Length: 621
Image (cartoon, rainbow, N blue to C red; front, side, top):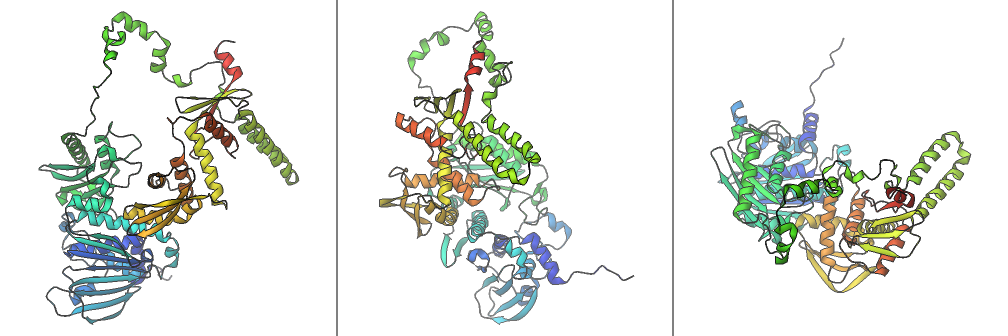
C-alpha cells in the first residue's frame, strides 16, 4: 500500500502560517511596524494604497540588514532574537518567532531594500509566493524599505473575505495608533492613497496621546505612576467627565506591547466605580513594566493575549494605582453641602428616629414596596396582568394563523395573510388613543386615553421609533430634505473618526446631512436635516458618531442599521424635555402611523397599556 503522508511544499506551508499571522492588511502593518521598532529606528513611515490591499510600505532608518540576513529574514522561523529555549522567557523585543516576513512573502509580492549603517551599498530582494525572483546590490538609504503589494493575490478566497476599504483602513489606523502610542520617542507618519493621515513628531507620552486622541484630552488627563519591586505602572486615565459610550480610547501595554485583557479592564472599571455611569467607559492608556520571566507572550499568533505569572497581583496593582491617581488629583466624587437651609428644620431631619417610629415605618406599604422581592410586579394576585403585554392580540393572532396555515393549502395563503394584516391593524387601532387630550408628566411620559383604558407613552422611545422608520424610508428612495446652511460649519475629528465619517458620507446625505471632506481630518457641514436647530449641526454629528461606535460593538448589525439607530437615538427628543400640546399631538399621531409602534428599534417598549377592567380589579370593583 502506497504511503500517503507528505511534507507540505514551502509556499503552501507559508500560506497556512500566514492564515494565523496575516489575517488582513492591518496584521501585516503591525508586523512591519514592530520590525522597524526592533531595528532601532527613530523615524518610521507607513504608506498604504487601497487600504493595504494594493500596497503596504514601511520605510525606517534603523540598523538595516546585511545581504545574508536580508535573504535569511524570509525563511520560516529565522530570527535573531532566540538562541536557546530560555530566551523565550526573557523576550524584550516586539518580534521573536521569525514568522512575519515568511508569512507576508507567502501571500503577497514583496520588495525589500535594506542597507546596514556604515555600508556603501545595500541589498534588493524581490519575492513572490515565497519564491525569490531576484537578489542584487542596490543604492539605498541606511535602514530598511519594504513593500508588499497585492495582498492575497494568490489566495483569492482570502481576499474575498476582506471588508470595504474604509473598514480595512480603520483596522490599519488602529494598529498604527497602538504602536505609535507605545513609542512616543519615535517619529511616525501614515499616508493613505497619497494623503498624510498622521504626522507624529517625537514627543512625550502625554503629547503623543493628545496628537492622536484629540485636543479635548489636553486638560482632562490624570497621570498614573506607581513603582514597586514587582512591577511599575505608568500612563494616563481620563477624568470621569470624559467617559464615553464606547471603549475606543482604552489601551493596555505590557513591556511596551499592546495587549487585550478583559481582566485588567475590569480592574480599571472598578477603580472608576460610582464615578461614571454604568454604561460608560473611561479613557485610559496604561503601561505595565515587569520582568519578562513573569509573563508568557507566546500564547497567541498576534501576541495580543498574554499570560501573567500571577494575574491577581497585577489586578490589585492596577486598580490601586488608578484609584490613587484619581484621589491625588482631586477628581473623586464629593458631597454637595450647599443645601437649602430650611431643609434642616423639617421634622424628618431635626427630630430623632426613635424605635417606635422605626417599627411604624416598617409596617407601611411604602416600606414593603422597597424591601420585598418582586414588588414591581406585585399588583394583584388574581390578575393575569395582560395589560403588561404589548399587543397580546397580535401575539395570539400570529399563533392562531400559524396553526391554521398548517391545515390550509397554498391557494388560501393570500386570504390568510390579508386577514392577518386586518387583525394587526385592528389591534393597533384598539391601542390608539380615542381622545385628543394628552397629559405630559415628569417631562417624560405622555398619558392618553383609549377605548380599553389608557396608555403611558415614553416620549423618547416613541420619537426614536418615528425617526427610525423615517430614516429607513429615506434609505429606500425617499431622501430627507437638506436644510442648507448660510454659514457652513467646520468639524475636525480624530484620524480614526475621519476614516469612519468618510465611510458614512453617502448614507448621511440620504438622511439629510450634506457633509464634504475638507482634508486633514476636517469636514464641512454644508447642510443638515430641517429638525436640527441652527448652530447644533456640529454637536449633532459628533454625538451621532459616538453613538455609531457604541452600536458597532454589536457585530450583528449592518453598517446602515447602526447608522439608522444612531441617528434615531441622537435626534430623538430626550426625557426631561417639556413638550407643548401641539408637539405632543404630533408625536402621538406620528407614532401610531408607524408600521411598528410598540417598540423602539432596540426592543424597548414605547408604551404600556392599562385596561379599564384591570384598573377596576385593583380598586376592588
